[in-house]
Every structure is written in C-alpha cells, then in structure tokens.
Amino acid sequence: MILLGVDFGFKRIGLALTNSDVGLPQPLQPIAAAGALKKDANVIAELARKHKAMEIVVGLPIDPEGEEGRMAKVCRQLGGHLEGHGFAVHFVDESMSSATSEAQMIGAGMKGSVIKRRLDSEAAAVILERYLRGA
Image 1 (spheres, helix red, strand yellow):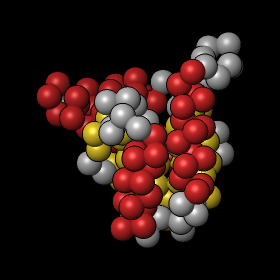
Image 2 (cartoon, helix red, strand yellow):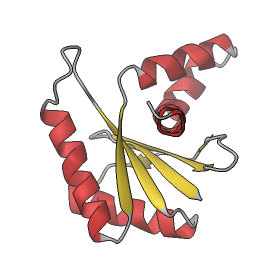
Image 3 (cartoon, helix red, strand yellow):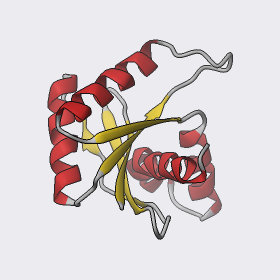
Image 4 (tube, one colour):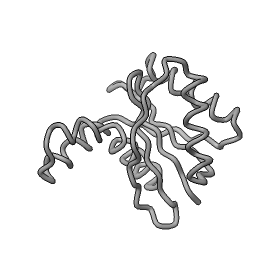
C-alpha cells in the first residue's frame, strides 16, 4: 500500500511517499503552504491521488512533556480535512524529525542550500519511517 507522509509547516509542507511493502520512503518536492488548512488539504489530497496513496501519515509535534500544543492541534485539523477527502489519516510524533534529517544530510556532505530546499520533505520521510516502525 502506498502512503503519503506530511510534515506540515506554515511556510512549507514536506511530503514523502513509501510503499508499505518495501518501506523505503522517498521525499517529494515540498509545496508552499497556502495559509488556509482547507486549501492545503486540497493540494495534499490531489497529490495523494496522483501518486495513488491510500493513506496519509501526518507528523504531530509533541512537546518534551508529551503534550500537544497549538501546532499539534493545527496538524489534527489538517488531518480532519484530509479525512474529508476520503483518506485514512494516521498521526506520528514528529519530534526531532527535522533535526534528524538535517544531520543525515550534513553527514552525506550536502550543501546548506540543498539542505534548506530538501529539509521538509526529508522530515516527511522520517515521519513515514517512524510510522512503518510502529513508533
């Protein structure tokens, strides 16, 4: 089954795809956030359909105390809009996904400009990896 991972941000939305049978997430081109969750959900749903994704995994920011703050509520609202498009939506703790992705890219010798361009979608790939591991 094909899954779409989402790392939501107010400026950019990172996206990644994986086939749950293979389990190797591939980052996609991030998209610019529209500034309205319904519009963002429409674009994400369209991309999910284009790539034949059956389910969507949304990163959920959890604070160090294990609480969901304002951004987590926004991500849950986005998930609700995606469910309205007919997708099953799963939430995974995205804590440190961007930091993990950045460290991996630095370790691979990527330039800062490349890291900045790819960071959000690389974080979406980490979110999918966590989902597949059952984290």
